[in-house]
Image (cartoon, rainbow, N blue to C red; front, side):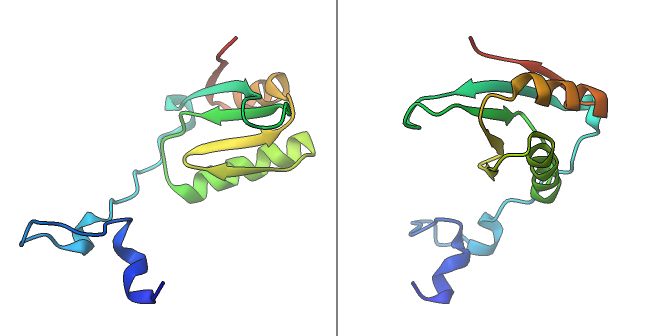
Length: 114
């Protein structure tokens, strides 16, 4: 793909003659304070070959702040993980450890799911 098509945010075609590709790119949301964040921590094993993954979602803010939180959680648990689509994925079942850390740091967090 050429460089001229990369910054359209997935937009391929528009029938609107006044449409501007530059206005399509959404602005990042300002990061909420820690005590206003409503984070959910749950375990997922589906489509992962039976391996458990702890997922933290509900974060509202900039991608850089979410990446920093993801890095801190990976260091805390001593495992790998990633940040994708507004969620922090941590390899393994570390829900209790993650919950304790988030509450200690001032986040509003709780376990979700079964």
